[in-house]
Image: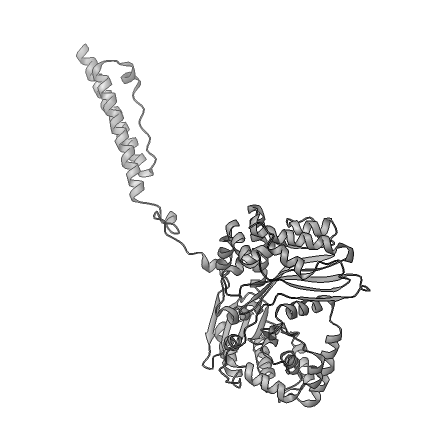
Length: 527
């Protein structure tokens, strides 16, 4: 009887094993293994043989499960390997930060062509940047660079003044120009597809202008009107440069004195054009709906008559560098409602690494007017909330070998002494008391401001003329991030602490402290 019972259990065991194998086979095919449940009679039977057989069943089930997992690992789903790798690799994100890519080609005559294409745009902008301005004039011809800017609009051998304007108006385009102390820029904004026409007209204007004597007389009246209509801020900027660079052409005005404007001759304009409007001192930049190869081809075809004078602006600057002068220019006029002033230090050149820290310092000092009071800048808060100034701003003007850095503004006459104390207090704190939160806030603000400037087409040409290359935003942001509290203090002590200072003021300026007071306060800072 016992033997018969064991035989029955054995048959049931083999049937259970067979069923388990069948289930395991199906599971292996579907890659979802499930162990077969042990037979109830095996669980209830507590004999040694039953427990052994149960363990064998469990081991076999586990083996099937392991084999199924190995199979899945060896046969990975290709969908999950298409864009990923189990091995990490270093990725360069600079192309994203540098978008759109700046492409530069130098033509055989030395003319550089730079583009930043965005073919999805509906417009295109073409700029001609010339590495020249009022600082490359003589005292007798001061104002000729700006005069020349006006003359290229007055007519060419092929087009009259009205025809130039009509062609741009018919395209629905905008033509503009600007002359500064070191650069002159001509800009044409057109619809997509009209960039080639814009290049052709600009080439005609800059190479074939007639400089007709009658038209020179017409332009003379236009420039004299601009000279008479200068506002207080334009006068202030000119006087700040005149005070800081008294013995240099960098201190002269862009418009020039009235005598030079009235005496301007065709020969002076032609001589300046042939000397400074040369191929190697020009950059043609384009952005928007343009292709680099097409722009290069059109420029190479149109700009064939540029002067070949090989003298560079760098050579001119080295021969006559601008020297900063600690000085004061003050003109008192108590009949004016507001006093205008500038407090200026000498700073590093445009290519000096310290300039980034100086830009952060400038942003820390900030700006304020009657509507801007609640900002992170302590100077702006004092000027705005305490009504010390109608307008006050920290600013810097950068040039090839030097820089003006400081604060300028306008205020009511009875607030000048308190305002001067507040300005020198905040400037002095940059030397010895700098908060990390103020630095970080200024870094974020500066990034935003430079980001907006970066995408201006004119900025492409400016950087190529100034640095010889286009600086990616990623590099600019990295340089800003590298500025810390220690850097601010070091740079402030280098350019502010116990350094010469230049003061400019006009209007009801009786209560504004004199130069010696400001100069003494630069050495009273806690270093």
